[in-house]
Structure formats: structure tokens, C-alpha cells
Amino acid sequence: MTEPETTCKGFEVNHLVKQYANADKPVLDDISFKVEHGSVLVVLGPSGSGKSTLLRTIAGLEPIQGGTISINNQVIDAGKPGTERAGRSDRSSELRTRIGMVFQSYDLFPNKTVLGNITMAPVLVQKRDKSEVEAEAIRLLGRVGLADRKDSWPHELSGGQRQRVAICRALILHPEVLLLDEITAALDPEMVREVLDVVLELAKSGQTMLIVTHEMQFARAIADHIILLDGGRIVEESYDAQAFFEHPQTERAQQFLHTFE
Ligand code: ADP
Ligand code: MG
Image (tube, rainbow, N blue to C red; front, top):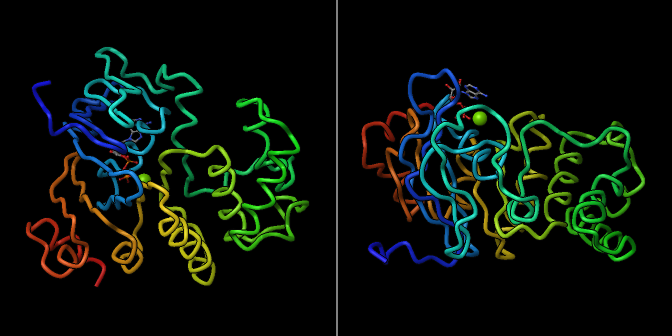
């Protein structure tokens, strides 16, 4: 190995390049970072900087054109030039379940109950025993404060409740890494807290996570590690959230943080 520093228990991205079809330059350009097992990376950056694209490529929802994505030193995806078209990477569904994702929009299946939403993938994709999966789903619902809502339909829930169900739906697959893309951005302010509290609890329980958020107090409280993206590149990286927020090193980070004051 020429790069011994790439050894990592956890999750790792090396020299990742992503370019959309017909774009004249990459939207992610040589991105590298590591997320130690059990730690939380917060990804910050202005609109259009490539945050969602980064999470979608990691989730296997978009092919990459260069670099690698690895879990526990095992490469799960490697870039292939000439695969610019949108669409899934060719990662197997088994590899895909090692990474869970929750999006900004509540994407629950409207024609399934809360329990049906959570149990569908483990039963159909992972072929797990239905009664065992239902018991776990009920435990997860208890953990996010929704023990009494297993038979509700998505339209009967508030936005904050739907996002908590979406978190359970991701967790039941036991992802090694959980990706959260602005999961409170579409919520009314009074529901933001109930969702962020669930995420803080997950962090305490040791769930490895990559979180995109514009909630700066939350970012500061939860981050073990921060990257700031701009124009598809990492412009600042810090393993000390307090130092990052109080004394950002680059002018770009200073400007970015000013917009939240
Ligand atoms: P962020 O989440 O930081 O706002 P995105 O990852 O959504 O940024 O977008 C980064 C850039 O990639 C933007 O310029 C956006 O217009 C472009 N982009 C996003 N999705 C697509 C797509 N499916 N096809 C082409 N360009 C896209
Ligand atoms: Mg986005």
C-alpha cells in the first residue's frame, strides 16, 4: 500500500469525482474524507455546492466517474469514466443496504401504514422474518416517540412524525452509515426540535452518520468532524466543531458562517 493513511475503521471517500451528463465540469471534484466508526460528520456549504450530490453518490443513487467509496477498507464503489448519466451506480442491493439515507422531503409510501413503510425493505429485500422485523419496527418507533402510531397512515402524521418514521425505516436495515440530507428543512419550526433530538440520541448510541444541515446550533452540538463544501471542493475541514464555528480558518468559511448570524 502506498497510502497507509487510508486505513480506516469506518467510512471513507477518496478522490471522488462526480460529473453530471452534459455538464462542462465536475460537481464534485477530488473529494476525500474519512468518518471514523461511531462518529458524526457534518457537511456544510451553500446551496448548489454539491452536498446532496455527495450524499446521493455515497448512497449509490448516482454513478461516480472517479475515486472510491469504502467501508472498513472495503471498496464498495469505484469511479468509472463514461458513466455520467444519472441513474444508480452498479452497486449490489446488498451493498446499498449498508448505507441508509433520509431526505428532506417526506418520501413515505402513502399507501402503506407506518409499520408497512418500515418493514417493507427488510422483508422483501433482506428476506428477514416478518414477525421479527415487526417487533424491531415497534421497538424503533418507541425509540423515536411514536410507539402508538404503528397503524397510522402517512397522511395522518405531522411532518416531524413522518421524518421520524423515515429515520426508523432507514435504521431497520442496520446501516453502517446513515446519511441525512437536510431532514428538517421542510418542517415547521416547532417540529424541528423533535426530529433533531432523535438524531442527537442516535449519535449518542454510536450510529455513524453524515449529516447535511443548515441548523448551525445543532451542527455544532453533534459534529465530531466538519467539512465545508464550495463549488464541489472541500474548502475547510475541522475535527473541532467549537474551533470551526468560533475561529474559521478560511475567508470562505468566515463568509459562510456570517450568513447565519
Ligand atoms: P446542494 O445540495 O449543495 O444544494 P446539489 O448537489 O443539489 O447541491 O447540486 C450541486 C450542483 O449540481 C448544482 O449546480 C446543481 O444544479 C447540479 N445538479 C444537481 N442535480 C443534478 C442533476 N440530476 N443533473 C444535473 N445537474 C445537477
Ligand atoms: Mg441539497
